[in-house]
Length: 104
Length: 356
Image 1: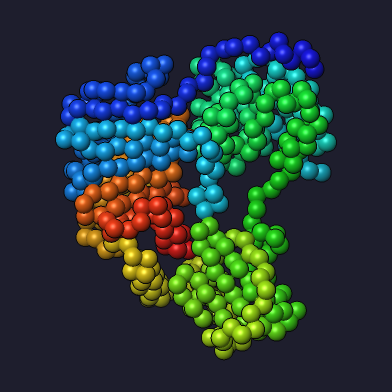
Image 2: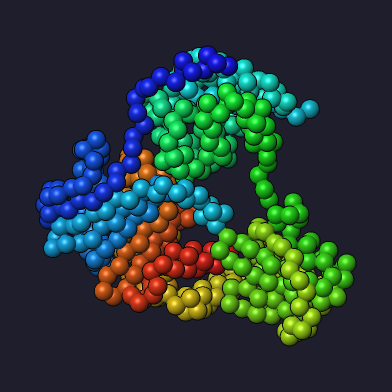
C-alpha cells in the first residue's frame, strides 16, 4: 500500500480551537487579545457576543454572576465580569475528556 | 441468518474511498459498504438508511469531519464511529474522542497494520448495546442477588451506577446490610433494586458487619417487585399521588443531605415541565437554564468545541452549576463556600440520584 503516501496532500485545514484571553468593554468591543491572529474574527465575535448575552440573561433572571465557565468537551470558556465588560479566557483541553458512563 | 451490517465511509478523496472499501469488504462479517465524498451527503444517507458504522475523514472541504461527527452524535447516538485521518495532531485526536468516537486511526497506521484496523472495526460491528449489569449480561440485579443467596455466598457486592455507589452485604447467603445514597438497611436495598443498569463487583466478605436487615431476602425482593409493578402504572390515581409525595420527600432529603441550596429541573423543550425544590422562582430559573443551555450548545457547535458538558457560575451569594442530561437541564445552587473543585462531581451525583 505504498501508493497511499500520495493521498496525503494538504487540503483545507480543520478549524483549530482558540487559545488565549481577551478583554471586552461594556459595548462588547474587544480591547485586548492574545488569541492567535489565525483564528477567524467572526467566530471570536460570536464568542464575545454570547458571553455578554449570558451575563445579561443571568442579570435578567435575578441571578447576576461575577464569573462563569462553559465546559465543552474540547474547550473551556471562562468569563469574568469586569465593570460591565468582561475578561474571557479560552482554554482548549488537550487531554481528552471522554464522556463517562454517568455523563451519557 | 443474521442481516449484514452496513458501513458508511466518508472521505473526500475517491482513491481513499476505494482503498477503504477494499479493506473493509474483507472483514469476516462481510458488511455492506457504502461510500460518500461529502459530509452533507453522509448525513442525508444516514437519515434514510440504517448504518452500523461510520468511517469518517477529518479534513474535508465545506463540512469537515468534526462537524459531521457532532451532527451524527446528536442525531444517531447508536451509530459507531471511526475517524480515519492523515492529521497527526493530538488536538484532533482529543476533540474526536470528546465527540464520542469509538476509534481514532491514522491513515499511515493502516498502511503499517491493516489487520489490527480490521480487527478493531470487526469488534465494533459485533458489539451490541449493553443492558443489565456489566459482568453478567442481561441479568438484573435481583437475579444477581438471588444467585449469590442461593449459592450461600459471603460477600460484599459493590454496585456502581454512574457517580452513585452502593454496597450490599451478604453473609452465608443472607442479606445483612445495604448502603445507598445516604440510606442504610431495607430502604437502601429498595433504592438499589430500583436501579436499572450499572456495574457490580464482588468484594471480600465482612462477617463482622452489623446486621440491619432482618427480613428474609425473598420477602424484600417480592416487595421490590410489587413496588416496580406499581410504578409501571397498575395502581389507581390515589396511590400515584402518594408515590409523587414520597418522591418529593425523597428529593427534599437528598437536596438537604448533599448541602445544595436549590435544584431546578426542566425539560429542554416542554416549557411547563419544571420541577423546583428550595426556590420559589422555579419557572424563571428554568427559563434561564433553557436559554443558557441553548446559547452554549449553539456556540459549541459553531466553534467546534464538542458537546456541552456543563456551565458553572458564581456570585457573592452562591455558586450554580447547570448540567444538561438526558434531554433535561438541571440547575443546582450551592453555598458560596462549597469547594469549587468538587462541585461538578457533587452535582452529577445529586442529579443521578434525583432521577433514579
